[in-house]
Amino acid sequence: MNEHKGFSVPGIPFVALFLVLAVVGIALILGESTFAVVGILFEVLGVFLARGFFQVAPNTGQVLQLFGKYAGTVRDEGLRWTNPFYTRQRISLRVRNFESGKLKVNDSDGNPIEIAAVVVWQVVDTAEAVFCVDDYENYVHIQSESALRQMAQSYPYDGSAEGQPSLRSHGEEINTHLRDEIQARLGKAGVQVTEARISHLAYAQEIAQAMLQRQQAGAIVAARSRIVEGAVGMVGMALEELRKQGVVELDEERKAAMVSNLLVVLCGERGTQPVLNTGTLYN
Image (cartoon, rainbow, N blue to C red; front, side, top):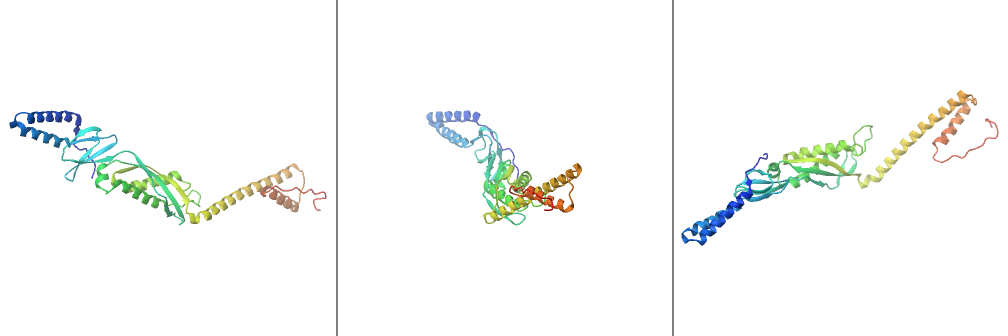
């Protein structure tokens, strides 16, 4: 079922018409008794036709039904008049948003995480919103959380392989996937998802400490690898410069000792204390 325009006319001209009917009816009632019945009929007709008046606020729609059958939607703003037999239901067309609760799910690696999202949406088809689902607002909330849960299970919290999409590192890609997942579920309800983004992401409390230690260990290993790589390069550069400039000639044993000392100085966490050798290199 798709939305189509319902019958309505501007209400201001009809206000004048009903005022005329009311005045004529009162005049007939107060006049000769012969026309009193006609005047009463005019008043009853005016009251009945007045039921057709309704207002349409900006960015809202009125869904019309005739004895249970969909008769169209009116989006024209202002005072309107339609068939008095129509029943009307107001639907907001404004952009709305909500934040889901914190869901506890397992990511693709099986780690329990907490995740929440903000969803921005609006109704674009009033007929589908009213007649295709029971309560479209509740439907939006439940299906959004279901899509968020499904999306979270498709990615790891923190990708171990280089370039692997993860919930923590690929925010834009994850948000796009989440929006598409929600839109696929809400399309049948006449709802368009404007934006969806993750608002909360964390490991579950029972593994948060262990995962923090793992991240710290990974950071330490990466930092140490970088330090050692730089230190080895500096030692090689020092030996090469000494050889080129002929400052000193070292045998393999002395080179090994020098390399060991330089690596201790360059890779140590604390400042080293110099030791002065007052003898020869071999004492």
